[in-house]
Amino acid sequence: MGQRLGQHFLGDPSILDRIVDGLEPCSNDTVLEIGPGRGSLTKRLVPRVGRVVAVERDRSLAAQLTGEGIEGCEVVLADALRCDWHEVLGTAPCEGRFKVVGNIPYYVTTPLLEKALTPPLPELVVFLVQRELADRLRAVPGSKTYGALSVGVQSAATVEQLFTVPRGAFRPPPKVDSAVVRVTPLADPLLSEEERAPFRRFLAEVFALRRKRLGRILRSVGGLDREGADSLALGLHIDPGVRPEVLAPHELVALYRAAR
Image (cartoon, rainbow, N blue to C red; front, side, top):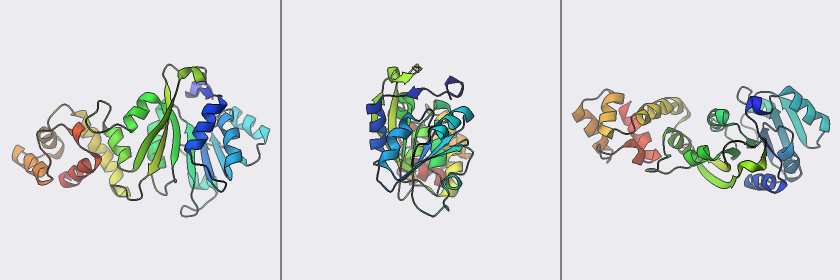
């Protein structure tokens, strides 16, 4: 795929094995690998799971990986953002479980996570991403990196940063360090599937005004007067004088529902 599509290739066996470890691999696992590239991770993954389906959008890399004929790996030429993952896996939406792994270019990480967290859900997702993005995904309320992305993902999943990967481990080296994150869907997500898209829009509006006090934001976003905005927040036991970046995901979900 090369730099044209934002991919940097990782070949260090010890790092690749640690990524596979993050998947908590079992011999009966089905794993969807996104962007296998030259197959470095694929070759470490195949011996440790039951089945690997590698989705590659670059025709030449897909042909190269297919030509190697790695036993236990099926190569699919497709765009992981656009294709139906269950169709690719050859299963009905409610049949079986699967895991997802990939070395993900920065510009598609957020939409890929959104897709991964849309039912029917994988058991878990392990992505190698830019470290800055990993920090945002796992950020806690009140921290500088906490924002709409943090809340959106954490309302549907737990996020762990497993380890960092220095830029020198890649060829060609990227300009920043990377990190491996494990995202595990919640058994009871904070939102219904129907609420997810409008909640994302609500978060975008709220955090665009993150330096303002919550009462002022609710007047702007919810079309409320001052008394109504303060009353809405206080009714949820939230101080209307705080900024949104100090609120936990469940509090922002409650605000969204009350402000609709």
